[in-house]
Length: 185
Length: 396
Image 1 (cartoon, rainbow over the protein chains, first blue to last red):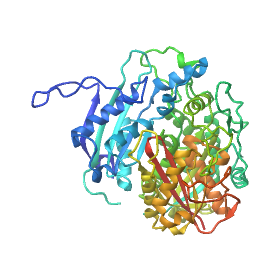
Image 2 (image 1 turned 120 degrees about the vertical axis):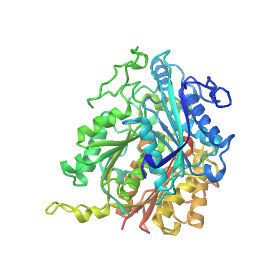
Image 3 (image 1 turned 90 degrees about the vertical axis):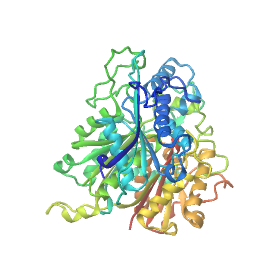
Image 4 (image 1 turned 45 degrees about the horizontal axis):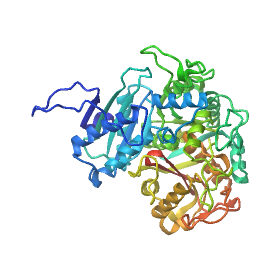
């Protein structure tokens, strides 16, 4: 299968355009809450928040029912990676100052993916990519590969990019996909 | 559906350069850990790692093993040009630049604090991959994995899936990690490093992991491609078959493995099912086995859950006890050593073992090397995020 054979179940974007639902409610909460245990960087809260928005639209409150969650993959795509955390650690090492233990836990993008997976009961593969080309296309291609190969039946793809420039805004997007039709191995 | 074979291997690690050094080092059971001289470890609790003394830059070392694996597989320039690269490395490298002659725009020393203009981007791991592909004559970069300690094994599984379904004719998978100051500081701060200078997987008294260098590359192809080889060209040897693979998550915690090994057991089960192989047919398990108290116990639970009674029978060792934890490269260096050991008919000893641990009731290879009985071997990996992979190789 290809990414074109995936069905988009839910989407989220940061910063979003804002707006109203048919019922007249604001479409988004315009703030991103911190994630316990993750510090200093927007990378992890953005992954968690975008994932949360997609999953809530599809499943309401956590967890995802086990029949679906067991094989729902979590894919994080980022060219920048968590630049803010990496820069913090590099500065601490260069200056000989203490590196906090929390930085160890957020030293790889897997950690926040695992946080989301644990909260929502997502038991599919956890994959983190640095995109070579279009990030969403690569994330969806990875989702399609895992679904066709049988280790996943659906996937949550989260893209996040930090600017690396103080004061500039990070961006993120997420999409929850599953197969349009049953997959033939 | 095509079977997937390994046709070229190349590696370097703290055990030395080349596949012979990997096999000899793993079979010897002599750990490669020594005081770190590559950077200042004066402020660290732990000051040892398994480094390759004459290591060049990560890009140079990766280029060397990718070229070596392609040569080993007998790939022509034309075949390289048609072949994609899948790369597993730590990301992002941008804050330190890519300090080498890789052809990637680097960032000067002290880059962590260097001011940058809006819109100016630092080199990414994808830039490194693209540059590497160009250096060694590979036609494209298919994917760059930054999935921590399952990066390389996930890349192998994905490459196999592409080949099995006919979407790739050949894939080179490469992975690398060279011990450096920032990750060393993080693992030290997280109190993950062994405090007694040794990695003791599944043993009573184990105190943690130690880091190590590794770069490795493999060439994967459909076995049917052998029939289509160019007349007159030297026949290439199928070194091993990638009979099965599996990937699954724990859905348990951001960084801790599920204590009962749920995700790892499902990854192992998927690998066995894909191959149509019973647990009783396994001749060896090269374990994730970091030497971390909680993680090793969770892995033992996963093996019992996935293999049933065979978990007490199948010989098991973790070669991390000799070459250390090589992070993003783990899945590939351990796959290479597993293939080399199975082909040699000798299984690596689980170095550093002191005494059995009630929480790890496995058939650990405590003296050896042991002779191989069976043609199937599992290589198991796990990572932060509850990510798990299993690769099943067949040699005969």
